[in-house]
Structure formats: structure tokens, C-alpha cells
Length: 366
Ligand code: ADP
Ligand code: ZN
Image (cartoon, rainbow, N blue to C red; front, side, top):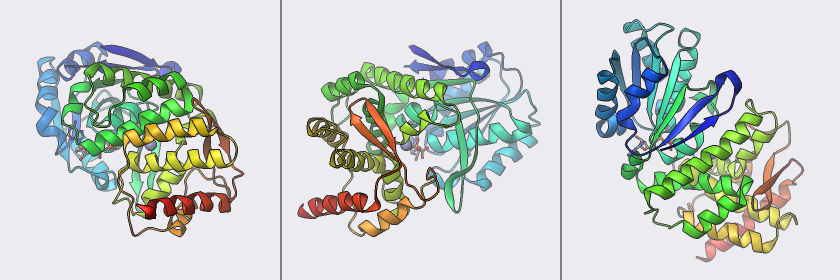
């Protein structure tokens, strides 16, 4: 087992990463001096796989625990299901000493975290992320949210959990595309912050992701450590935290242009990183040799086939709705070399269009 601390003063918390950890959940919560009732929030895919182990562990440690099983998918991250959590919590008579455990991917983590942040002005919250994406991304930094019909993650808070417990065995059942989605974010950490991590991935990453447990343990650990370092320096996204958005400006535009129904998050971000790296090279910021290395690794993570019915205009339009936008300007995070990125708000729209047009030409060749 590996452990790291997300350093946020009084709100610091540990992330524990290893195998066979679900069965230790009860003991872990006891050590955190949890006293009151617990509500486990999960989804219909995760519950049959891992629900029993977690619930038994909690009960064996003496907890009064109930479970709420949500439908899977992004559609669950809204008021309707948040209210289901609040209603169940009220039915159970949960008070300020009670706690919420999120068992699932990013959707469950965000939704249950949002409920924990707001129920009775905040109750204790523990995350048990079961997707690679949630393990390396949403489990660090305390962003919790639900969607609004007019935008993703529009209603939310910064609310840190007391503990994140990552059981790597849960990755055994994760569908391939979900693994790929998480792996894109993993590669992102290497590009933005850590050339040596990038090199490790470059040497070891196998496109089928049939890696040893140890690879995943190191990978999740190093990813969390990089994000933790960035988040500790900038908890509420004043400056440095923006670099985590590498690949996301264009990635979000791709997700939006395909109505969030074609790509999953990391798959769109993988294209976003490819395009942003090409843009950086075109701007004279990134050398060709480094661009080639980046592209190699992104191809290893793998690209979902680009959809037919999408054009440059749709994507450029999508950039205008970017939440991270400052006024009229679109912010791009561009690599200057592997392990270092800069924040740019002065990239002309025509240049972005040119990168996209060239990319479309290349894509149409195949
Ligand atoms: P993400 O973490 O990518 O934001 P979700 O919470 O939507 O995403 O999870 C992605 C999908 O994978 C959902 O359908 C969820 O039910 C399913 N899932 C989550 N964890 C596992 C797992 N360990 N094994 C199998 N399926 C899982
Ligand atoms: Zn992301």
C-alpha cells in the first residue's frame, strides 16, 4: 500500500492506494473516529461488484449503514438525484456527526461529495473511487458539483474528503474505454509537470493497458502526487491550478460539439492534448522532437475514431462556452517542453482554426 497526503492545512487528508483495500474501509473509518450513521452512495454497475465487500466491512466495524444505488451515467449528476440523497439522509435521521461514502466513478464522487458539502451545511465525506479517472483526478482537490441543464459542473463547492481509499483491484472490471479515459489524464500529468514520469510512461505504457498491478500503483500514486502538489499551492484555482486544464479547452469543445454523447471525458482530452501540442509547436513554443514524443504517447493511450458529422466551426463555437474563459479571451495551456506548460490568453482564433483545419485534412486522408 502507498499513501500520500494532500496538504491543505486543516483540511489535509490522506489518499491510500493499494490492493484489497475495500475490505479495510470499516477499520479506516473507525480510525478517523467516525461516530454517527453512514450512507454509502453508489451506482447500479458498481454496487453488485463492490457493494457487498464495503458494506460488510463497515458493518463488521460496528457502523450503522445504509446504501443508495443510483443509475449510472452523467445524467445522475443533477438536482433530482442530489435530492434523493438528502431525502434518504433525512429519513435516516442523519445529523452533523453522520457521514457519506462515495463508492464509484467521478459521477458518484461529485454527486455524493456535493450532497456531503451541503447537507446540514456539511457532513463528513469519504471517497472510494472505482474508475481510473476518478482515482487520478477527482479524488484530489475537493471539487464537488452537479450539472445544470445549461452547463456541466455549474453548481458546486470545494469540499475536501476525510480520506480517499483507492483499491486498485476495482480496475479489473473497468471497461477499456474507461481505462483509456483515465490514462489520458495520467499522461497529462507527465506533460504538464514531470518529464521523468512522462519517460516512465513512455517506456512502460502498453496500449492494451494489461499492465502489472505495480504499474497501476505507481501510476496512480504519481498522478495523485502531482495533482496534490498543484492543488496544495492553489486550492481555489487562482493561478497554478489552471495548468491542470491542459488539453481541456479543446477537449471540452469537442465534448460539447458532440453533445457529450460521443467521447467520454478523457478521450476528448486526448484529442485536446494532441491539438494543443500542435498549436504550441506552430507557435514556436515546443520543439518538433518533443512534439513527436508527446504524439507517440498520446497514440499509445489511443484515440477513439473521430466522428464524421462534426466540423471546425462547431469546435470553435464550443470554445466560446468554456467556463475557464476570461471575458473574450480563450485560455490555452501550451507545452513548452515535456514537463512544463505555460498559460496563454493571446492565441488568435485563426491560429486555432488553422490547427483544426490541418487536423481535419489529415483525418480525412484516412
Ligand atoms: P468517470 O469516473 O469516468 O467520471 P463514471 O462515474 O460515469 O465516470 O463511471 C463510468 C462508468 O463506469 C459508469 O457506468 C460506472 O457505473 C462504471 N464503473 C465505475 N467503476 C467501475 C468498475 N470498477 N468496474 C466496472 N464499471 C465501473
Ligand atoms: Zn479532465
